Image (cartoon, helix red, strand yellow):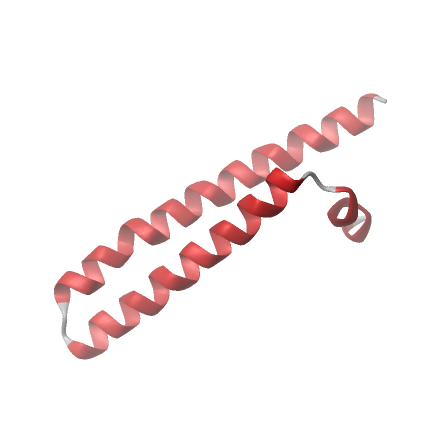
Length: 74
C-alpha cells in the first residue's frame, strides 16, 4: 500500500515530505557544527530550521490523511 500511495501521491505531499526532510537535516547539521565549534549563535539559529521542518512534516501528514480519506470515499 505504501508503494501505491507514493506513486499516486499528490505533488504537494511529495514537496512537503522532501522539504521537511531537507530542513530537518540542514538544521541538525548546523546544530552539530555549532556545538562542536562552540558557536552558540549557529547552534541556536539551527533550531528554527528544525522546527519548520517538523511543521512541514505535520502538514504532510494532514495532506496524506486528506488524500486517503478522499480515496476511501470513492
